[in-house]
Image 1 (cartoon, rainbow, N blue to C red):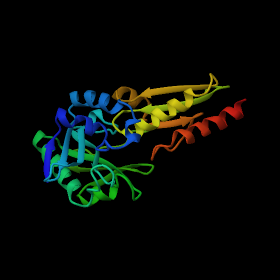
Image 2 (cartoon, one colour):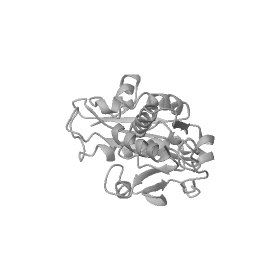
Image 3 (cartoon, one colour):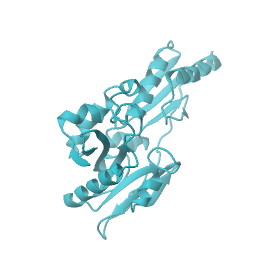
Image 4 (cartoon, rainbow, N blue to C red):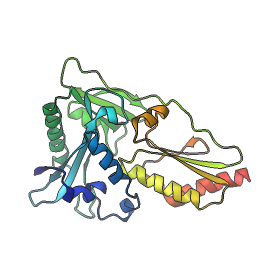
Length: 261
């Protein structure tokens, strides 16, 4: 196994989260590429894992927590650790140590940079981005928001634990209209896919449906809401993981349109 720092050659693959075989991932647009160009200037670092045969099968992306969707200082934040797990494309490469090797490489890198610790987030339920996996690697949970757990590993005695920001504002519907509000950060193609589908579904209706987007890449914008990636229809949150289909979103909007007619 080889650990590689990302280069221009691998950027298109990274933008598609190693799923270059997937038509669905291409539906997510270029938001990840735009986010990457912005985040790279803020200190984002990306490492890839490749088999001895040169097949890239894993990735980890992490950057200064000050520019992430968590709150903290002098820490690095892991946006995700991902090992390709589908039979399509490059095949299922999970459970071969790629994730652990990537995480160790990132931790060593962060320590050399001089950060006071490293943070990560995970889901408390047993599916993608499991918080329990980070716990097994020595991370300790310090905050929780719904099913999202925030974990960390301090490197210095004066390191301060990170926290989730509180939501500061609510999405307000427009009387007589159906509102579709999407918050998009850009770092995650799955969330970007939700944005693209919700926008397309909303725009398939007449002016009774209003589509509103909030870009949360900028930390001040994010802090003003306390929301990173989310979807609301008439002010009510819609589950966006895994990304709902275009057809499902259009039906949800259509039901609201009929009620406001």
